[in-house]
Amino acid sequence: MNKKFTFVPYNPNLKKFAQNLRKNGSKAELVLWNKLKTNQLGYDFHRQKPILGYIVDFYMPELGLVIEVDGISHVYKAEDDVNRDADLIRLGLTVLRFSDNEILNNTEGVVNTIIDWIERHVTSSPTLPRGRANNEHLP
Image (cartoon, rainbow, N blue to C red; front, side, top):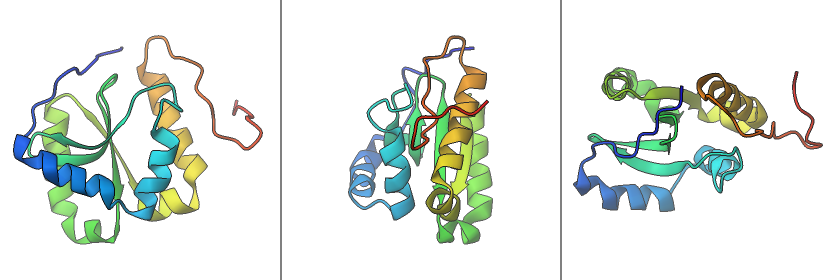
């Protein structure tokens, strides 16, 4: 089912902070952003998007998908992440979380997980590249 989220509530005071985060992303965030940006997967993604009182790492409004990159600091903020995810889910969004290590050590696996989620949740999907070096598609 396609459900376009044209507007999600956010705290306007977070806009400047989000801009700063975009300039100072982690290596894992930058690696994943290079795979998500400019419609490489067939969909528009936003980076460091304010939603509610949070700033999510990546957001795809077409399907209400939030992608979070968990660095080492998230080990100590697990309860905060649970509360944050619950708030986003109550808004009707879906949250996918990946660790820095997953992204840096298995980028294509992470991208394929995102593609698989998109394909399961879209009514009619554009042909999504699998990100293989020779453009092979997985069965």
